[in-house]
Length: 126
Image 1 (cartoon, rainbow, N blue to C red):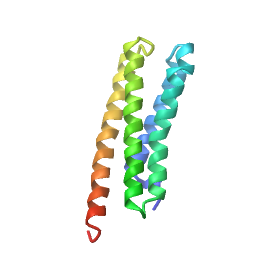
Image 2: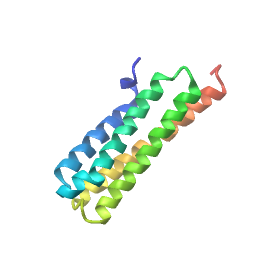
Image 3: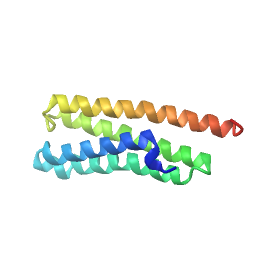
Image 4: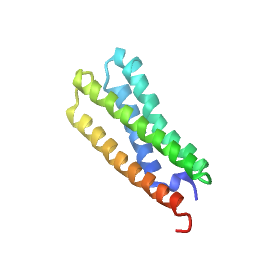
């Protein structure tokens, strides 16, 4: 099995691609290099931390730690997206709603996955 088999990784990958495209196509030039750059780093961190955590999955506490980093990066990314919309740098309301909805869905999936790993960690026989 590979991290690529994880639903949360696939969802993070798709969101990363969508956000990356949005920052390059939809934002004014000054935002591409300001908030857009930070957003691209934070959304990339979501999927990268899933991958790194998966690589440490034999050590459940490490796995959980990186999944929590991923969740925190997702929260940061959502805040950047919301800020761009609130300041009218991201004008496409439907795109904004779609990205926030996908981020919220991924957040729910990450929390459920973390809880499942924690249960397995606390009860290794199951």
